Image (cartoon, helix red, strand yellow):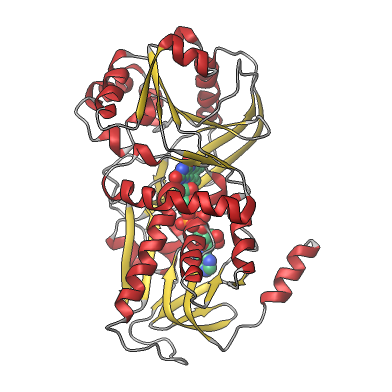
Length: 420
Ligand SMILES: Cc1cc2nc3c(=O)[nH]c(=O)nc-3n(C[C@H](O)[C@H](O)[C@H](O)COP(=O)(O)OP(=O)(O)OC[C@H]3O[C@@H](n4cnc5c(N)ncnc54)[C@H](O)[C@@H]3O)c2cc1C
């Protein structure tokens, strides 16, 4: 262990006897968002985190804050989080750009779909020549393109860590290397003792199936694993924004909800059943060092195995060659991402009075997580106005849910396709 790790262990070993206004379990982007929202209201906040630093979905993603591709509840939450991303990037000091989102259209039906979505505004359409002039996508594969304005891009490797450091400076207390084992009204039981709180927010992503298996089962939450690569690729020009393709349009609400999506899905699935089988979302983001994140595949399973099929990753590489018209590509890193996957896009539920579980249950938690977290804090403190105060010292009671000896298997399948 390095010096920082030792310091973290020492700093967080003992459990406080204080009662916090809010205890948050999980320090991914959703938990950090909840901590930020609570701290800005002047509340006392403690974050319980199993790991010593962010290692979950919040650092394994594209860093794409795809606000304008959402609709309905997701759009509302994404818009609500946009301002927070902009403010935090300044205050916490991490990389973020107001990039918009590029969409490469390689078939007329994709262009028709984008044009239909553009009727609501916030999307600029380009001819094939214009798009090729602005992006590294090969001119020969294009029939046109677009940019969703207003979207953002951040660096997923650094944002969460910088936000956590900023929150510490604001007075938020962190208990790292500490796992919540069960929760009840006003209390979180952890591997280092119990922590008392007026309100508890659980933001543990797919691990909700271990902490609260019945809640996860009710919401049909299971685990979605994704293959991701970071590559060096000699692009003809830099990619100044996240880049989506027709495969992406099948999954983001603003496009997926339109009738014009049907011919796109039918054609893509008929032409490339191999890509449909790995549930491809062909998309790219370029990081400040010039390397490109490319992905991704999706596989849902209550207990996914860690073995990543090389064939699926080769497909990602082949598709990148085809799109950018470049033969050379060097893989720098490969990783498996994981997130909670459910029937709805979000889990937001009061488990027992004063304990709220929240998660993005499709791959849009970077985009919508801050909005979801802010709403959870709003709801938690709106609820306390009619609730009795928390009871310090309360131990596990009938409302407490314990981790099961064996993880439950979920049979419910998601009816929607996953984003990201
Ligand atoms: C490959 C991939 C690509 C994606 N791309 C995008 C994208 O471009 N745009 C977008 O909007 N979204 C994207 N997503 C989705 C997004 O990354 C997630 O929705 C989001 O990061 C979830 O944040 P979180 O805080 O809920 O989870 P996490 O970041 O996974 O954090 C959960 C935390 O809870 C902790 N924890 C769990 N159980 C316990 C416990 N019992 N006690 C204490 N701590 C616990 C874990 O250690 C972890 O740190 C992507 C996801 C993946 C995997």
